[in-house]
Figure: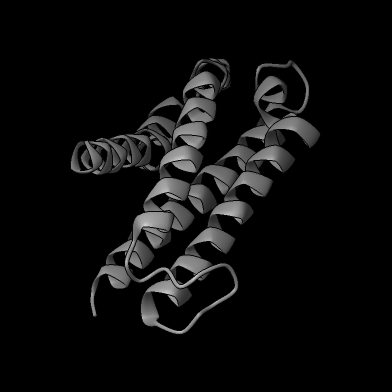
Length: 152
């Protein structure tokens, strides 16, 4: 049962990664350039994807905690005595930064709804572009840190 749970955790964690990071990469390189003339469509994509982003973050949290606890390189909270633990610390700081950036742009600045308004749509589109590009870059860095943590 343990090996099945481990495999299921890795699968769900990877699937959540595909959804979360893939969403921002696709937004940055395909959807945003293609739909820059239609901010209302970008706003709709942002709104429709929100549920999937929250689900993927929940899956990340649950599977990530489990996978950390069972990892043989994990020495305990606050113990950074190997490359894996340092990479995981940096990765998790980056993820918290991504969540904070998402909260800032979506809840505080309300960039999505502003893109579909009659006033301020151009400014909101510029902010949304900055946000999407930053999230795509951060997501790529999270993947790089994950890969580096596996090399020892």
